[in-house]
Length: 148
Figure (cartoon, rainbow, N blue to C red):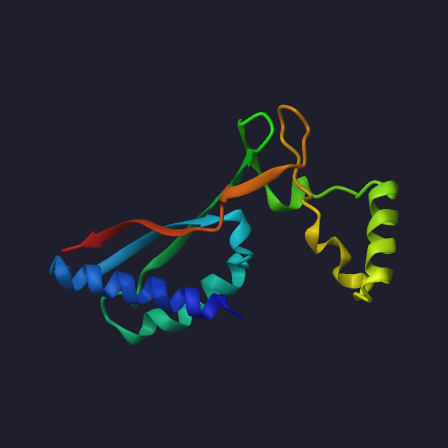
């Protein structure tokens, strides 16, 4: 559960910022969570709610999470597209799956690993799969609402 480690980093960052600015109380913590971080929001909130009780500065704070999309860049047309993890995955065409099956049999790979080399995200402009994920794995504390 990497959510606990993420919650700890958010907590430490908030405490450090509050101490630096001599803030007595943080009321709200606004976090942007990239869709490709694969962080479960409910687990992150749960973890943070446990952690926040360690300091009177954060004891009553609320964690507000906003999901942000991933962005892919196409190597063919050079354009970018916003993508969401759950919406963008699609079936691998049968001919590509068969080709991968043949390859995995030749090199004795586990068939469960065969799709790791296929890029499942298509460019929204030219439909190419020759893309790179350039953002969407970030977690940012955007701002804090404080009470002085």
